[in-house]
Picture (tube, rainbow, N blue to C red):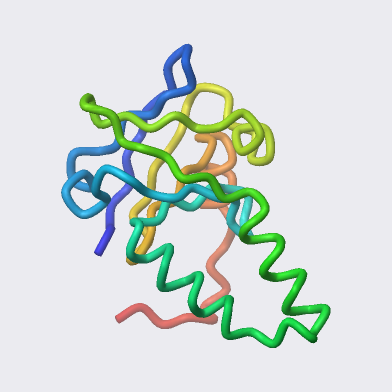
Length: 135
């Protein structure tokens, strides 16, 4: 399971160093896609396949289901972790979530979130309305 937050930056070739704590579990091949929030999700290959099976079980006769599947898979890209534990973030995905240079990677249990630092700090300032209880 992924947890923790790590501040980093992407280099001039748009590569992000995967935090050491995430490396073993992430593996060498993974999937990156846009989330429902204004960030990217980075999935292990196994978690991506599990999620894909859930999407395949949706009723494709439903317009809502087709839209959900399309939004999730249209921006998905398989990426490889190189020998220096970097991934390249595709231009389209960087643009969709306004990633320039400074990023925050956040462990989100079964996946990793990649945020622009500015957006992450903004979202973390939003008030907690008490809707959820922390265990």
